[in-house]
Length: 100
Length: 449
Ligand code: FES
Image (cartoon, rainbow over the protein chains, first blue to last red):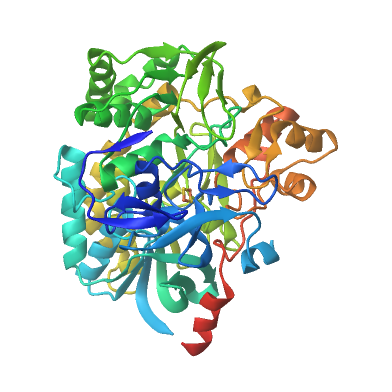
């Protein structure tokens, strides 16, 4: 899918495996560089999705990050050792959804 | 609650220029930006990259001046509400914050127009803008069976950046309708007032051809795969694919301005998009709320930076630092250059018209969040829905977490073509605050403020 042209400097955990990354880049970019295409399953049909926009607009990059649900991976900077997993299904209660 | 003279939303070219100009005039300035570093989309990561072209150099200069200007700059900050009298709310580091500003300059930039083709929700399908962000921020190049498809200047620019870095794609699928040059020729004389855009554009396509990357014109593109992208079908011709990058130009990001009561928006027939109604200085129809840059109408990075300065100069007048005559005098040369840089726009708009929404197949998902197809939208129109807000109530299109950010232009276009009416008469999605999903934990921080 993608290849890196610049060095990595740390590792992060994705779905229980180690992935090379560079501190400060977005989590979404690190996952894409490691060949990860699917980041979440939709609450509606359970279909797998991956990032579309990488700029915070589409919400298709949602993951579970260090125990917190519904984190936009494209806006989350990589910290060495961070632990992330797919966002599966419905979100927790959140205000915007409630207000909609 | 923090008090400031001017709050700037966005640290792209318009926001950086507006903040720098406002600081030079002695105002206190607070800048909120969703990204980790200044630059916006066009100058993303410009401080960490080596400047390769004029655009990079422009961006590096803007960013250096911005960093030095003394504005209270908050990266990783997402604005989610604007209330009357300049009250603004945002989230930063997991906590909600608020401030009151005497003047707002909103520089929210542009977002890519959606390209709803069959299968565009498969993992492995992304936008060209996304791939460019991956390239600029982390040096990621497309690899293996990678394709680019759609139309628009950014598509050709990105393909060039890939080639220049030693990358390759399998091919470019040009979905633009034929006859673009003939339509655009009418506007050529005007475009030649800023010939650098044309020269650059012609060089881009040539470099792709020289690199031996096939360019194929097509009218129909389908993405297929089981759970992720495996192949694309170009006018019935199937090729294996693991990455498909789509693009169909950009539209103003009006998510925030549309949510402000009384802020009027107009349909721009040439750019086929909504934009806030602005005077020559960037004042919206709401007192104290200004817009600069692409979020007020697509003009590109240079136009945006000039508009940011003009807005700050006008803010200085509104806040009593300049008389109208002084403002006009100080804006004179900036205004002239702003006009020159805008001259090629009509030519570019005619050369790169957006893809027709009528061509979206009934079975294709338009609203990705709620998985609503074009057929469902057309069904709602057949039942009497006239605009985007009615179809939203009927179909849930635009109701998911992205709040219509991605699908908005396509939903609007599908309704207009299904009704067979002028898009200007079809209302777009209303947006509402909070414009971004918010957690209770974030909100709790407000009470402590
Ligand atoms: S990829 Fe679109 S919001 Fe993160």
